[in-house]
Image (cartoon, rainbow, N blue to C red):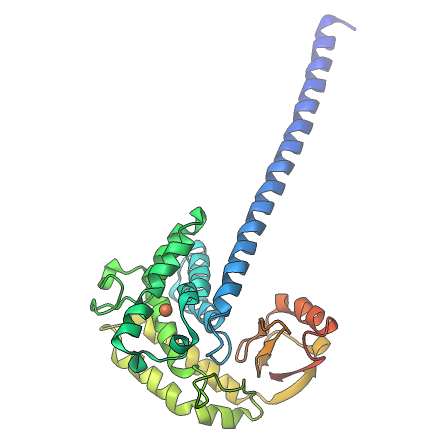
Length: 311
Ligand SMILES: [Fe+2]
């Protein structure tokens, strides 16, 4: 073998080794970034479960409803993917600061609060920011959470921000939040405790029973569009919610075996684990990725083998 050939062979071996090393390095980087992404999702899951503990005075899940509808509004408005993801997380965590509330404050509507209770209530956005800013990747999300009670005319809290100084994501949460707070607070017993969870047995009776609250909420939003709430957001949200209600009216209530659950069905009652964690919220649409977990919960005796859905 002449000297040139030997050099070429050595060079090839070196190149092959460096390719192998590069492959290993790339694979390691990929694994680490997958791990980091999963850790981030797990962190959000934990925080979101903490938020759920403040939601027993709602019919269904407040934060999950808001996250689902905010994403629909954002997509309709053409928000980019990254901002929509941040909005979704902010919507899931927007009321995390309410973990400092007593039950006596959790169930009240704003017009039922004493001045002192109202001052405490307003503080939940600051508590939310205090908690979320401890996670360096949640800084942007914390800022959205901080602004979810701001109003276009400056009458909101905590800062009284106006118009363009309010983040677009916070403007979307503000609209959906008002709607859900108005329509989906659970009725209370005389002692103030939340009434037992209800199930939807007759969809038309359910639509009729909620019609007044639903009309009030949509009229309020429509009449204050451009004053308290972002005009375009209100218009898109009303379209989404009306279309959804119309399609609900065409569905029927039925008990379906857990292994026959399909995407597009809607849960007709709240389902909790024995530990009181909400697994499936009334009014929430079944998504493909939920189904294996639902089956697992049923196999572990945490869910009935047949559940009530709108189909
Ligand atoms: Fe709030």
